[in-house]
Image (tube, rainbow, N blue to C red; front, side, top):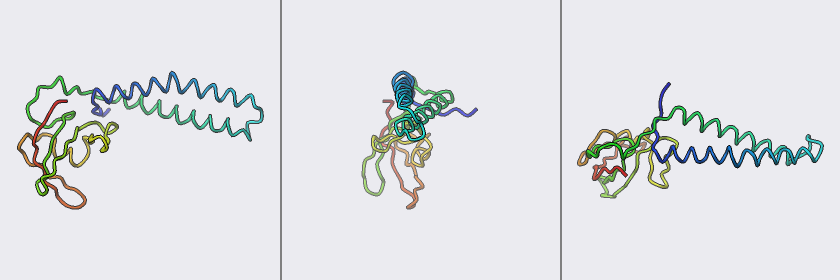
Length: 158
């Protein structure tokens, strides 16, 4: 079975969501279904159908999270000595070689990735080009618009 890398923060977020779904959302939905059943004819009962749909989404998400956690390999970047090398979980400051624009990304698991908060998936083209490189190296990213070069300015374990 293939393991999927995940940061400590990513695992914690999934476990928190799972607990919310199991202890809060699931009982609330079950109560809503029971209440809707009491209203009689289920064929034309919109509240019942809406609650059942919510239940399906909730149960599906619980299964999804449990599967992800069972296949995860949690990597604590703080337990790995800093060497200046780009690894899973590191935060990398880059300089675009053509524009001198500075970018900072944290390399995380697929489920944790969010470009809005500068977290990129380890499977993204940028991360694949960076992993294994060191401070001062130039990484060539093959993007749809052509190749883009970034110099690695710093690598931090934060």
